[in-house]
Image 1 (tube, rainbow, N blue to C red):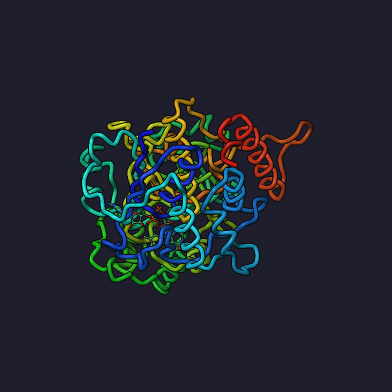
Image 2 (image 1 turned 90 degrees about the vertical axis):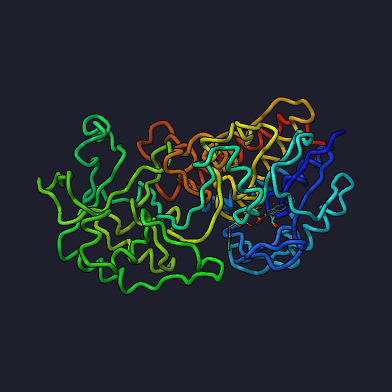
Length: 460
Ligand code: FAD
């Protein structure tokens, strides 16, 4: 059988190769290290963890990442199996000994009779006779390949970003203070949609004293330090970190992203002194991002500072703001539902380069890309996981649900899963019950999906 080529032996590429080989499809895995290193990797091991040694919460009932762990275990994930083998005591989190973990992945992949590991960099588009390729080269993709992909997919579609804004769960916003309105009511949605508790923008009003206190907090905040290779990355003037804007002058934000023009607080009938706007972030309308609030303030302080915003006192964050170099494609625009590049379907993408964020999310997309490439090679029908699963929700986010205009890398979170309906006779589901219910529904849907998959039994 003709092999499938996997480029990049990180979290996603190792998982993709494993899934392919376990379905009987031969794989050639091309990894450039140790011949060439990235700015962050330090070893020659496959699936090296470049920073933290935590895969975050392992509890599927309370955390979407724990749910993703469990789903991946049920799909025969190599990354989760190696993680479980390398597990360290860490409360409810799955933390690992990074060397034991990487060694375990490296050995499993190298020992697999259907996987050949080649230590070489792929610096251009893969040769035309590679008819099925999984590109899993990560956020630090070597420049030659990154440029080739950029040219193929359209110059706008390979993004280098350096700042991300926090995202909050809509249900944790206090609508006794905040209200829906687009500036100058431009979205034409001030009627029915707002009455239904929906809209493209949510506004949080500041009076002068609240604004001054907020600016003080931003100016006092501690920021994360740049890594050496990040020092040369310029700020894009269009997306300056909010604390840098505040440092330019106390009114800079009030005349910038926090300008109140075109907005009227329905409780006072007046224009507030300043406004923080939140923009809908996912198709389901469960997540909203803080417009213009990209930041490199330390995580712990971000929560304290952003909860000073009127209406966000109790906010829970699906993602905090961050700043680091990253390479990702605009997946909703350029990938099809099988993770294939529309412009060149022989190329399939996996991992952080598809616009997911995090070790496990990257591996999860590797798992799906490997399974999709295998079914394609074996002539079986394409079978994506149900959207009610964490795997399906992540896939939908990058191939369909995310807005190409504002697409930004995303961790798995419960806000990406479709809403759950309250049981008959009940008006609303209590917040504390919601996550376990979403989790149970996801695992049932996953089991049903796996039961329909003829290759699953063979892989086990
Ligand atoms: P990687 O794991 O980076 O794997 C890509 C592989 O492709 C690498 O082995 C690389 O050597 C190889 N490669 C690249 N280009 C080529 C080429 N042209 N030819 C052949 N091989 C190539 N996530 C977290 O959950 N926790 C963290 O603490 C964390 N810290 C991070 C710190 C930094 C500095 C960065 C950049 C990212 C961090 N991430 C973190 C985000 C992300 O989860 C990791 O980057 C993760 O490793 C992504 O998995 P991946 O498989 O997509 O890419």
